Image 1: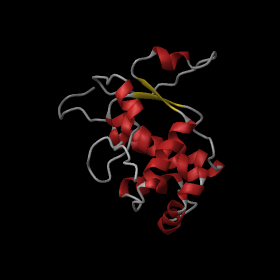
Image 2: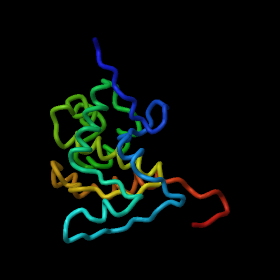
Image 3: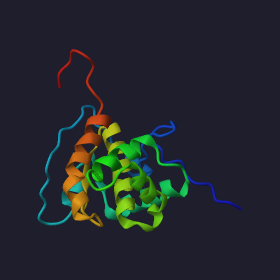
Image 4: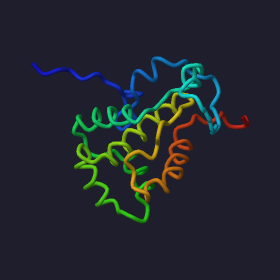
Length: 168
């Protein structure tokens, strides 16, 4: 008997970013979009547990998310390709990225990027702040340098915009 996979999409729309249910269901949604904040904690993860709107995106969460998505055996969706092109800027073209995507189940870097893109986009879409644990894990130094460009592109695309005429 084939096990039915749980649908972890943010919305039931093809190509929408995915997000782990544990993040979306366990955290309260904020009423206003948040700005980029840098959190510094010297004694562990206390702020993650103490902040109701903060999702902790771990290295393991990113891999679990990527493996779930890759297990669906879908072609690379356009939104994912867009952000992977930013991450691989100057190092790979679309054809090379699609080739890497086809073997992503065995590529730690690609799994971390796919999981990050999907989880962070889901957090932005739900107006949630997030703590990204060890974002550089398994990334080549070239991808580490492009990480913030990819981060800001996702944030700009998925953070809800205020209605016209209203400034935040």
